[in-house]
Image (cartoon, rainbow, N blue to C red; front, side, top):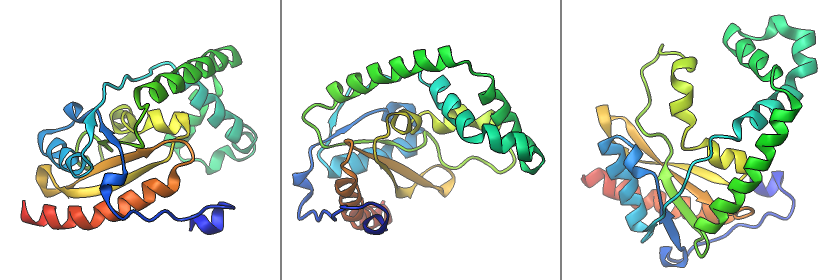
Length: 207
């Protein structure tokens, strides 16, 4: 699909996972069985532990960008938005430009921090979620902060990331490992995910 969507995209084929230098982070934040599954993926990659910080000051920029996309649409078609989505849009519309500018500076600093922490590595492995899928009906407002905690940093930076199912965990539901690549390294992430998918399917079935 990327060959169609992204001009100049070329597939990458991995002959061996030893070609990939990987790190692993944030598994201590996951539930026990999710952590076990994600660390098993990291072990397949020979990943080394990385001390990776979070940034808590970039979210106003995300909200500002959402407001920019929806401002005119929402003004003209507010009745077409669900109540839950409308509440989110309205919160985004209240973010002032000065706050967004400060968050943009924080994002630039965070990009440098993460790039430094991953210097010498091709890929990072983290849990996609800290738990398995939550029960139906809990509601986005109660879940959102926890659900996006481990994925949002790379969405904010614009780095490619792949969610890889990696075997049953709590309640028999699947855990997911997040494979994060460097900017522009989409092809390597997809190749690693394809390679790992076969290995994980075999090891998960014997656990």
